[in-house]
Image 1 (cartoon, rainbow, N blue to C red):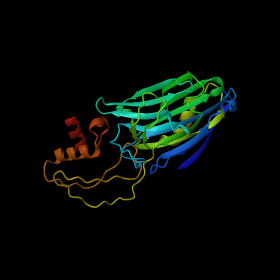
Image 2: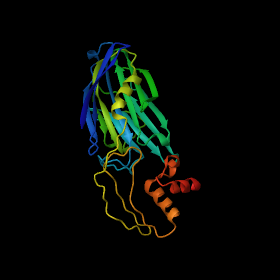
Image 3: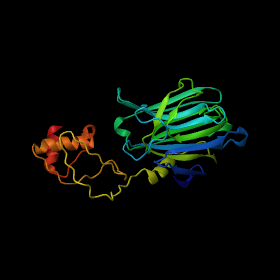
Image 4: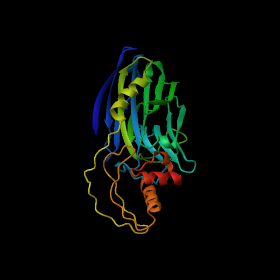
Length: 316
């Protein structure tokens, strides 16, 4: 896990926001942080804040953490807050993919100190989910009974909410958990029943660790997110060291699988020689279509051979 420290200065409001960002290890994507809440420790401008970046990438090297696999639930766990003593769920943040309705939602649910239950969700375009960073930031000023949180899609704000409460959790001594799976065993949130299952998130997670800050009430979230995204949001392709793969003879319905461990930035280069006995264009069209699974992104497809490009356009 790599840690990076940042200090973001806002000249307009004369404030400095310092925070630590950690990239979770994709081979064991799980992190916990304990926090003891005491309202006497916070003046009016003092707050506690934390955040989580997530990028869905089902073909990444992210390993399963926990007993639940990806087929055990259509909802992916990103973050939760549990009471240290009660072991009861206070807050949960997760993604749900519904194949029947072809819909994707990001959902945040929690119960506050007055036992008020809140649920917020945003719908996501199916073409704007995979390989795209999403960011949740939570800021709470206990002395002012003010909760503020935002959800960003890369550098575009998708949700901004302000609520009057002292904290977005019921218990005072809590554990923040990021990554891994979750099977609900005890919940303060009424509509999250025992044995509700959340699979591990198949992608990458970064966390902005919980910290206490002295901040003015008008936080410039846009500038803050842009400064962080400039370091993490842009992908750089990596050259694969294994450049000479063995020859493969593909017979009827045979399958050969090769997954690179390197980063791929929405596209990759596949090169080699293909010897096809008959129906050249039809077979190469079907072969590449199934191999790359690009049926639903036809407008993004291009081939280096112009004849294949022409054939693709004629078929679509």
